[in-house]
Image (cartoon, rainbow, N blue to C red; front, side, top):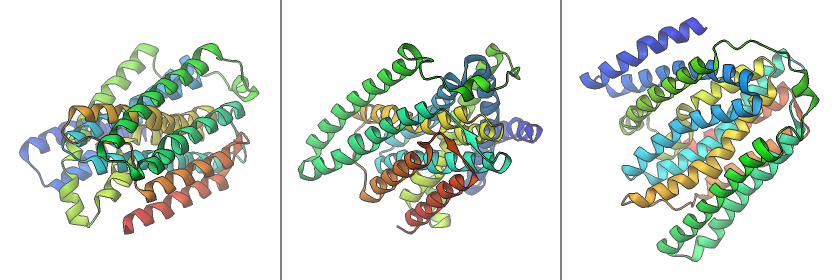
Length: 350
């Protein structure tokens, strides 16, 4: 499989560049960009696995979420520059749904097919549950209630204030987990993990991760320009493109890495990727995009539509209920995947 992805990446990147310059058919380029990004995501996954072995599961998961979400951040900035605020908000919603339902669901399902019961750090699960509740309910749902009777300027002012608070709290959460309380809530499953030799050294893994991220960012930026034509060809709405297509392609790195880790019974890393990426999207990427939008003519208040808010809230509640006990199985994975498919159908039909 690694050899297949290698061929896809080495061939896909130059062919994508050539096709872009020669103006090949847009639908063809859309498929080519998607496949190449997925291939590059496998390199990011292998590099992250090597770093996780060297640096530990928490930092490994954080690195993967950071590099993966850098792609989404770049896509969204280009979309904001083009005035596509609704697509950006939809893609943020799609990232939350994709990570909590699709990525976590696939991880639990694939890992559960190989192992009847998989454990992960219960203290991390409870800590993440509190942050997820804050990020979605307090920072996303409550502002929607307050902004119902506000004008555009007041909405934007509230969104900027919330964004600054969320960024500060996210930094505080990282400091809490990685500095002041590092190792305080160590779980026996962490200690029992077998020692492995990383595929690549720290320097090589970091270089590969950085180069792959740059390539994915370039291809993702080109991918954005194909959405309008592809939407017209397949009859997709902007909401569906943002929630399903942009979110899946923009987070391909986390998708591949989390499932790979779960298959190897490294559930601490898999959960950290899925949930950690969601928290980073909600508490860092979304607020940063609100602040960045101030530089463009079209500003982006942190106000989502009712279907988006209900879907995100339901995803958070379902994930908390299923993960709060610190273990999982394939049926819980199937439940998360079923929820994702139901919501996907709903957004497709809107």
